[in-house]
Length: 465
Image 1 (cartoon, rainbow, N blue to C red):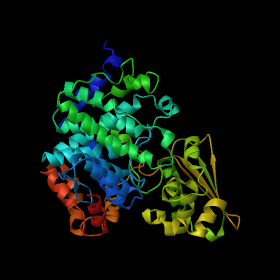
Image 2: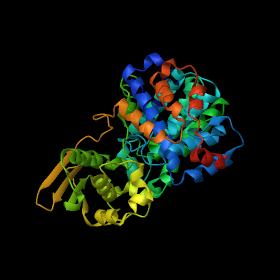
Image 3: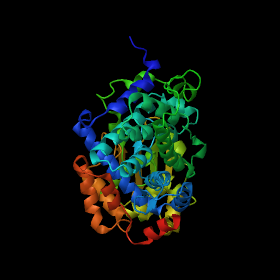
């Protein structure tokens, strides 16, 4: 019997290097299209991020070059566009998540794949296979980590797992053989970093775009035959599973590989706000759609979250600015009840600084941990002044594998946030290109469609160039 603990890196490298369009089941290909379109929606929304200008300045300073398109912007170097596009996807806290490892995946995978496919004028089919390879490698390495042990040590998944997936996606596009792919994984693992010490700050989002850049560099260096370890995951002295966990579960990383696609567990978010409060959002929208709830007559809103969600999001009854509002259970509950909506408009200063909303969040929303609630689940009870009580429990947040977004919902998300960032005439063409990606001849043409509209967004990106 083969010793999988000695072969996990090689098995995953072989998978990523040899994955073909025909190897990816139709439903998996469709989910990959959903991931791509959702990432583009998040990226155009990311132009509204508070720190986007700062990261744009960094991206512009990385290298002198203009060969790669910024989504909704101009051109930067290969490295700069990868970094900035990665940040744009995660900037306003509405990108995907692999809940089993609390890892946002597309910010690390999509930008370097787009950049290389654009540079080399590759096809939509090539891009689709690369995204599948990158997302599957990221999530597979993640489930092999033994996440509770990994998390207990303070590690944050995106900057640690993302470089492997980014390297896999780029390696797929560059047609790496398995040996070169394994070396790319060794170089990716040598850059794997990021801990929860950064929690509550935008640095957790920087982990993701830096993960994209790290994976790009790993693949490009491996392409030059740079010597690196071939078995990074299970190396006894400093391998990922031994150093970051306690040996991990390498057998889980490769079990049924190519038969069961873990990337299908990557969830999407219809609403901005933190991953672990998407269940709260789902439950609240169920209540406001069923009942005529007047927030002026709400006596108390009681929210039960999992302990993990409570620890991360139950302490923002008062919040300083946009990022803390995006993390706050209290504010999210308050604004959904008042506006019956949750878009980026609800996270602008003129809204979250409304004294009535701040008072409601601080005084009328109670949040507690409940052992009967797990992960992103939530229970919401709304007590009214007249004594009536409305209750909803969310078992499966909208956007997850059990309760997925429709393509129409993702398309609407893209349309909503593309307004003013992309030329209006391009929006339908971009949606169509993603929908028929395997038939789309040139990713370079897609990136041209993703160029900025003549607007404030253009001027902001021009300032970074």
